[in-house]
Length: 348
Image (cartoon, rainbow, N blue to C red):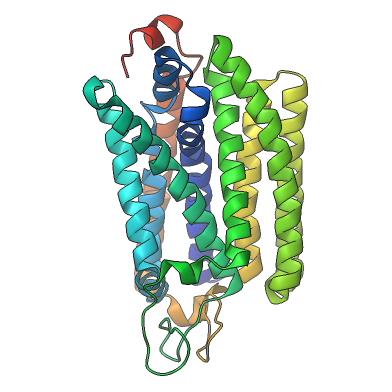
């Protein structure tokens, strides 16, 4: 395995980390207007993610930075081609962050911040899946590796509707279903009282929806993107991640049936990480498959120099364990359910 392949795996690990850690607070945001029946409920939901959300987003920033340094051609092509979608994603995350910080300090604008928290979570939940669906399906590339809208001179895609094709929407719905599931399993760990009971009901419903959409997505890939499906099942990695996704879903069901809330959360985390693995297995060794006349952006033709990859690997070997230790301390500090008294005083 060369340095390019190592960094392909490491970028996948960073994205899987983002899915696991930021997935549950996105899920809490999507569920916020539906489960937050009172001010105490809403405060409890905000407090469940309040001390953690900004650290969770570090995984996304690190993943983007690693992609830029390790595979600059991929970074330039994807970020330019999906410019409007990425700006929408960015503004959604900004308003989501603002809502979490200002909601309890600015009660006069409570409704605005509540809607910002919901939309700032729901829009990224869909767009992340849509982006993954488009990459699995392949992107229109010229010989220079740029997006085109159909022949002629290279034109960067600027129409969000182009990305909202049927296959990408299916993957987007799968993403939303899993994020809602992950959010409900997190609330099952953190909430108390009536909010806890409602979270358990959502967990059961979301697990069925996720399992159904997982099967639908596999069928849609086999029919609409047969090359990616064949690539995914051609090696042991694709089968392993598929089995892990099924195992994670099963853990959610088992945990829910036995009120083993931590088991359900671990199961949903495993399912989310496995979906990232399935995505990687379906496109490897490409990072951006091509639908156009140009060749795909692969590890071989888009990676940085060996020196860059080596220096980055040394930095990652030092930095990643430190980050993981930091996350261990933070999550240990804020472990356990939200105290009822804290939720009632609206301290977050």
